[in-house]
Length: 240
Image 1 (cartoon, one colour):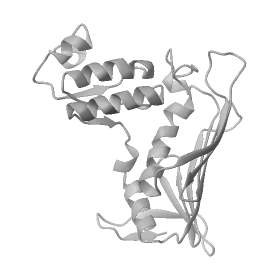
Image 2: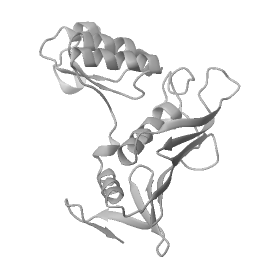
Image 3: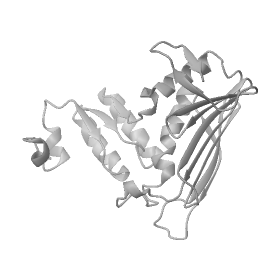
Image 4: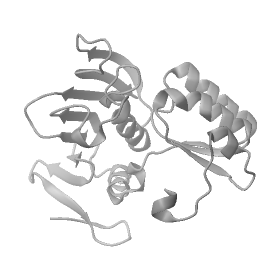
């Protein structure tokens, strides 16, 4: 980093970095199993955190991090970029204006020809201990759902694991519920198709789909696959 960008301050450990009183915020981007101990150390120094997902490797760890941050009065945020995209603003506006009508169901499907993907090879992302697409991709769309529809509660789940006990899941199906609105999350890897993600909100008047992170599509009984585009910085939209 110093060779590429010039003189930078380098620390031998995160504990040494935390002793610097001029640092107010830490971006915590280490592998998931290390989030909990390092986050607690950061919080003990009274510094704010932007943490990668998943927040922790267990509910117990997450609650301990949450309570420590609350007691210390620091912000423990997670790195969820989806709500900062224009597509989220458009989806939120359409839900609030009841363009979709009554929400009947939410579905999210993700498919991968291989996991880990070719561009994200490392020592942990394909392991059952702290990797897999449930952890890596799922939290983004759970967060999106909580912002658009409400907080989901778990009803049923099924995870299909390979015979190798060290490897992450092959696939999963989860049913959630938000105020009697069914929410289905489904994923599968190592299949014969290109990577594809589809997040749909089914309404009585229309169906809204966020495809592959950024492509927003509105379907009605009269028009199918109409791309939603933002006309301006206001909340007016055009369907083309």
